[in-house]
Length: 103
Image (cartoon, rainbow, N blue to C red; front, side):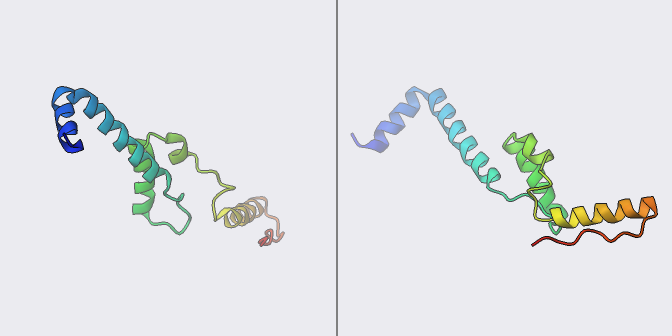
């Protein structure tokens, strides 16, 4: 008896076990695939942002990653900091310069 015949007979005798194993393997694969996606940046398109959120919310059940991307870890953190400083300076009526980019 070769391995293919053994797998076929085992599947016929225990379909629930094979269904559970297939579900676990598929879930593990999808979760790893979705977790490998880089977080969207300011230059990402709407479709990529949708795919990122959908994949993390629905497929990988990783809602904290989909909804709570850390600002400091994103590539556009410096740009966001400069924009926030400009907005605050405009609101307060100050004429101070925005912080310069740090390499």
